[in-house]
Amino acid sequence: MQEILTGLIVALDVVALYLLLPDVKQRFLLSLWTALLHMIFPIIGFTVGSWMVHILLQWSNLVSSILLFSIGLQLILSTRNRQTIVIPITILAITASLDTFSVSISFGMLNLQKHLFILSAGLWTFALSYISLYLAKSRLKIKGDALKWIAGMALIIIGVYTFIYHIE
Image (cartoon, rainbow, N blue to C red):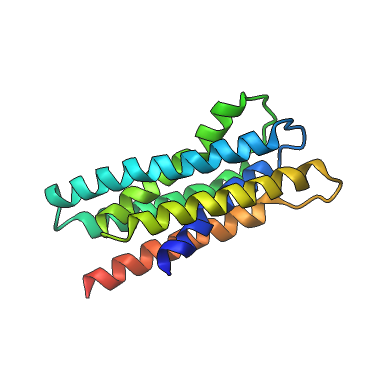
């Protein structure tokens, strides 16, 4: 269940970003590309995370907690950054998906079920990014900052929980 919820949480970051892009012409393609990258980066991240577990066995839980906390904090702090830039669709998808790499390193170190997380992240990201891009084009304005705060706080809570749980 944690993997499915985390897949949703990582997708919320994309929602917050894509709600700010009203003029995307290839919404389906961008959503599909972003979803695929939200599955590819975790594969790499899980591999790196598993490798790090063998090297840093005693420190992996601490590193994992710090990574999750830092990513959550970065999401919250990014709500202050407001810039309008025209970015190619592939670069936009990669940028929106890079955070799944570092999150999945943490999950790789915790030995969570990678296939379930990867599938969850891909499906949630595709559905939510397409809906976000559609809503951004419509007249209905939804603030992405609230979603970034929710996703950021969720990652911080998971990071703190992981740290406390593994100390005991």
